[in-house]
Length: 135
Image (tube, rainbow, N blue to C red; front, side, top):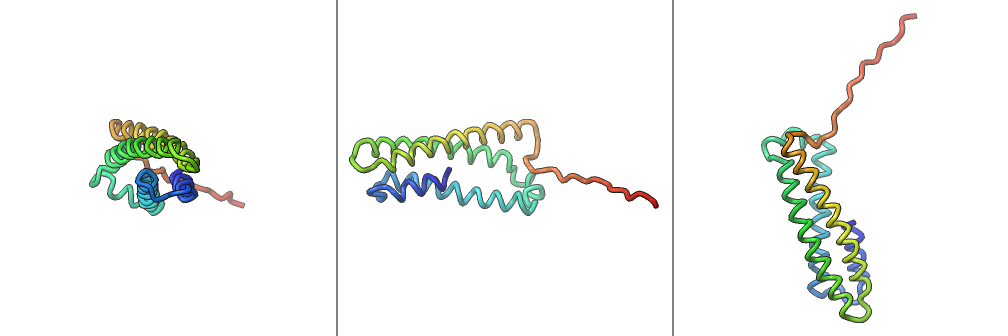
């Protein structure tokens, strides 16, 4: 969703207005943090630093703050896009920003729940013992 917001802002008639650049900043920062978290998950670094950095709580706070930022940026983008001619791309960017806001809100709720119950958000590695038949 963040990438779609950036593409919609880039397609706007005047992408250099403050509302568009704020939405682009919020979406770009969301992508950067998502890549960093993805690297932490893929290389299993998250399990090693989870208790030290309290990653469930940190991710919960990040998602809640970004939910608010997407609400503010999307609202500003939609208002600006509806006020001027040839700015329909900003309205589309605002729509996808609202979708991102909902997704970040769901993520904040799930991370809050995981933090309160003490769960880890990392995937569990399945260990299965395979026996070969004796012939």
